[in-house]
Length: 112
Image 1 (cartoon, rainbow, N blue to C red):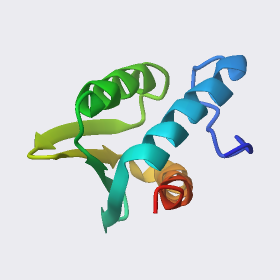
Image 2: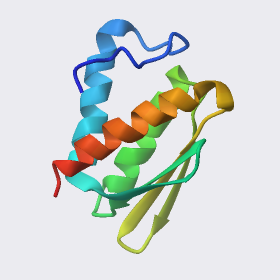
Image 3: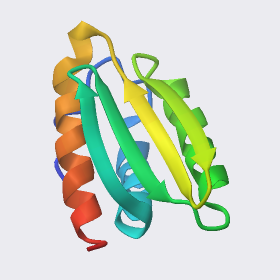
Image 4: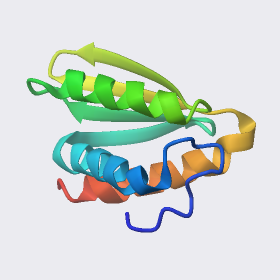
């Protein structure tokens, strides 16, 4: 996703690093996203292929993302051959989660 206009002002990641971080997420979703759902308006659930190294990759990205975008709450759950990533936000950031869900779906389509 080349347009980073959806990134909120509250994100503290330096602007010059944002395209690199987006590229990391894009690659993860394009390579490993198997499905996604929106169980609640403020909650996005992603399922990723749990191949070797994927859980560590997700946890690393989540840790770094939490450091710059504290409005996200991430929960990573591993199962047999799957990594589930739950992402939640507060009401004030629902539009950000909407944009993230749309972006994730597009990136994930590259896998199919």
